[in-house]
Every structure is written in structure tokens, then in C-alpha cells.
Image: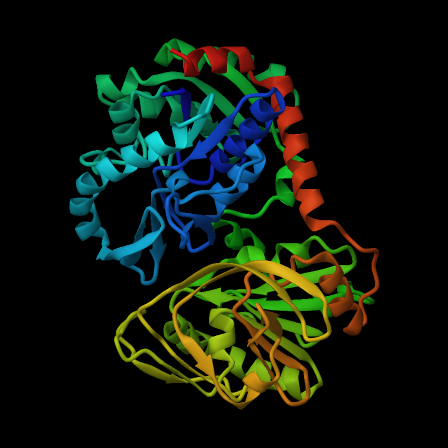
Length: 495
């Protein structure tokens, strides 16, 4: 096996994903063949990836797609062998090595995990083939010792694969000394011995003020500090990993008087929102306000465009959409002449009816749609997974991917949104103001996005969205190079 190192956190959302991506780019720029790996991820933000030895595609967490981009390599399903996609408060769809494995509630999954370790280790070996360095990302925290039995996400993997661990503490949320020392206190001696050092993340201000804090952590744990990482401003230009980020985005919206002259795009935050990184290219547009409406908030009256994002449970999210009053908001929006785009599950919701005769997404088998597109959707067990290169009927180029259950059909499909391999895909209302598409990455094509927004009255320079992500990764790598003991990291990884 190649050299390997694993980043685990004292809790969720401490910045592991960004740090792994940044280190992947850092060591790739040094000329190493680097690969990312995450044994288990829980996210409804997914991406398509190759299944080695097969012509078909599978799915992995979107974060591992980003980390593969940081390494300059194409993603494969082995980079994230177990993906949990929540579809209720207690249960998730389980994807193993890119393919749907089944569904399980929390307690049932705990019993299943030991069976998945062999698949995880198999994928880890695949990822390591031909690599100089594998950088592994944990999930949650190793301090969750109630989940240690059968663990495949943190110390269970680290001990089985003999990969040394760097513990990441988030000083921005407070209590970082207690978090690191407390993790040391609750770990077993075997797990504790896997930790080779720690880093402090998201520090603001004069780092010398924390010298005594670093010394205290080392005094209590014996672990050396490998660096204090400042707040990485460039991280805001990277795709968000999971719905934790939405809790920050879906805050009480600013009044319309504060948005004078700016085009407003409204996004309802669905209960099972999926692939919401589709909105990132819009969020990055200068002079554009993307307003995320959470439960209890109205869709803003001054929106020019409403985007209904993807959903892991379309029928359940339709019920939530109505419960929050967004259906009435949407009708008023359309009556005022506003535009609507539905992406994947959002596309299905815009039709007349959604049927799930096999109960693939939940107990409800049928629901009336929002009725803005003359189409119907019937869920089918075969999941569509494919990378897509497409054009609009006007010849504009787009690319992205599809991950969805169900087939959508009806009169409005005669006005497709895109052509994929010459075949019509998606649906458009008769007046052209409501669009539905299965294409994730719909707003990622720079020229198309520029022209689409221009038709809504937004004027700005043409942006290079992918180039900005690449530049952000380069900036993060440079920032890490300055503050992290990189040579010691490499020595630890090679032990």
C-alpha cells in the first residue's frame, strides 16, 4: 500500500472535507500521485463516478468528486465505497461501491456495518493502486464511542487498514481544547495510539495567543501540534458538502429594499434536499441574490426566478412544500410573470402527478404535483446514473450528470430543455417560463448561465465557474503550505 494518512475530527463540520481537498492539491502540486478516500459518507449531495472494470456509472459523495478534482484525476466509486443517502428522519438508502445496496434504519445499519468493512478495505486497496499518497477523510467523530463497535468510518477503518490519524479541532465553535483532550480521554488505548498529532482549524486573529493552548493539548494527550490553520476564505468558493451548510444559508432573508437593483433567485430548502451544489454557480454570480427560504419563511415577492432543487424523497418533499405555504407563493410568483426551474426532484414536483407504486422513496405512493408543467412522473426501481453532455435546442452546450429514479412524460416534454445524444430531455411550459430538467450542473456551463440570466435582466461579465473552483483549491493549498508541518505529515503517512 502507498503512504496514507487520515483526517478525523472532534465533531462534524470541523472542516475535514476542505482540508483533505487542500492537502490533495498541495501534494499533487509537489508532483505526488495523490488519491482521496472516505470510507463512509452521509450526504444527499452525490456525483456520478466510474466503476472500474465496468461501462456503467455509480455514485459517490460530491465531496469526494471535489477531492478527486483537487488531485487532477477522474473520480471512481472506490473513493467513497459506502454512501448513506438520508430519505427519512430515521432511515437511509445505502450505496456500496457506487450501486444501491438497500435501505436501513439507524439501528439496522449499525448491525450491517461489520459486513461492509471488507468492501471498504477492498476499495481502499483499489484507490491505492499506483498512488504515492492516499488522504483519508473520517466522518463525524471518533469520540462517538457508542458507535465504535463495527465502525467503518473512523477508528474502525484506521485500525483495520493501519492508517495513522491526524485529529482536527475547530476553534471557531469554541471549546477546542476540551474537544481534543476529551477525545483522548474517551478513546481506547488502541485507538488513541493511532493518532499521530492534531491540527487546529478555523483560527482567527493572532495565532501566538494560542501557544499556551497548543501546549496544554500536548501536555494532556502527548500528541504534537502539526499546525494552526486560519479561516480559509477561499473555502467559500468550493461546493458545500452537505445540508449542514444550508443551516447557515437558510437564515431570515433580507428585505427587498436591501436588494434594490439585484436580481433575486429564490430557493425553497426542501426537507430532503439533494445536490444543492447545483445552486453554487448562481451564488457566485456578482450582483445576484440567491435567497434560501427555510421552514416558516415565504418565497420572496421580488424574486425573478424560483429554483426548486433536487430531492431524495419527492413525494414527502411535495407535502412539506405545501405545508410551508410555498405552493401558494409559487403560484403568485408565476402569476406575476416570474420564471421557475425545477432540477431533478424539483422537476418531478412541477408536474401534475408523482406516482411511486413500489414505495421506493417512502410510504406515500402518489401525490398531486404543483401543476406548472403538463407532465407526470412514475418512480421505477432502476436508477439512472450517467454523465451527460448536452445542448439546448438553440445549440448552447451544457454538461453535468443525472442521478434519479423515475420516468417523466407528458405533453410539455415535446418542448425539451436539452438534447442528450440527440434525444429530447426535460420539459418546458407553453409560455416558456417554467422549465424542468434532470440535468445536475444545469447552471454550471458558463455561457449558458450567462445568457439565461441575461434573459431575466441580469447583467454581468462572463464567469469561469470551474476555473474559480480550481483557483480556490490552489489558494487553499498555498495557505496550508504556510501553516501546516507538511514534511512531518508526509513522514507520518509513510510510517
